Length: 380
Ligand code: CTP
Ligand code: MG
Image (tube, rainbow, N blue to C red; front, side, top):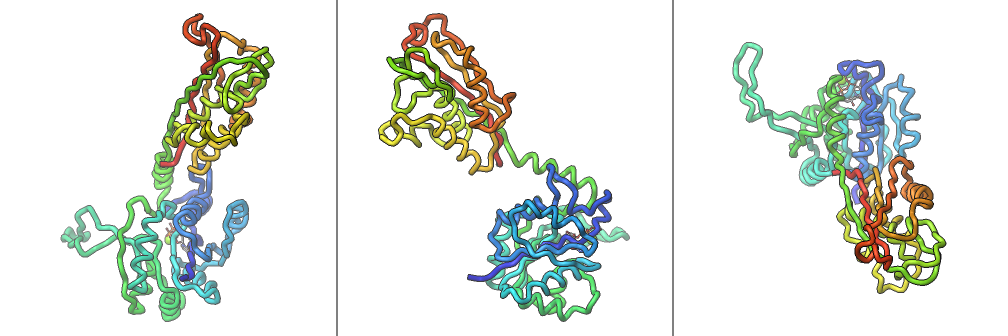
């Protein structure tokens, strides 16, 4: 297996972005820009070594990374981006790295596809960078046309065979500054491969770029609402479980599990929001394992699936349809129980009840129906 490293350069002053802290620490969706970039890199590829290059005056990096699940090496950068990269490469010299990816902290929208293009290019070339064509016409300041067919906008990560780019930086004059790392590679004579860039992978440079990035992050989620419905028949016995609360009313609900129609409807609502089948698919009534089971389990399973998908529950609404038992005396307890199971504030948990005016099976008191909606926020 080839050993891979990621160098994240975050030692700049962010002068063009203004503000009173360097842009890599400015908040985006409540989190420092740097953390968005690291989280996306981590999601995109399992690098063996992470190295974050920061300015010598930086006193924020430790606290910013403190609660982030990443064991990163912190390296002190230099006056220019080129010097910062040089220091990052030097710090990795004894780590037996085969491939190194060098990325700007100011580009949070790095994607798995971008990385896999680079990995592929490195199979036949010592240096690779994502590049995009230029859509606008190009002119010199004198108004002369420039042929754009041969020009590209180049992004990071830029990826290299570690030994080659290390040699290239060693060959570069001390203190020299270049626009990016493939410039250094090119000067050293390395062959460069360009891979397909990504419009989204833009570099936050000016203050207004933060508003643009904020908007892009918001559109990365969508709201889904699922609905669920369940019916159980009454039978002798007790207690009757409803929305996770035991009710002593002299009868109970018939079913394979504890027959809590409220939690079943809610579980199905959640599964519906995830488009992940229904409760019967995951907990077949034919399986003796679920005999008499507390229905909390089913709801917690659906909540776990939601978490695995990176989603969050926003709101739930349960309607119980029956002539008996009377729901009102138990309603607040039901809300509290659901809120605790779902880890939601009470203001986001609704339990309502209605009768069917003595009509139909609920009207005749043969059983009880429950319906529910669950509203979730999911990543696109
Ligand atoms: N960078 C660095 N060391 C430097 C200069 C820049 O590590 N001496 C990093 C920046 O932190 C940034 C990336 O290189 O993540 C790209 O540089 P740029 O967008 O120019 O950032 P800044 O130099 O911080 O911004 P500005 O040029 O506006 O001051
Ligand atoms: Mg700069």
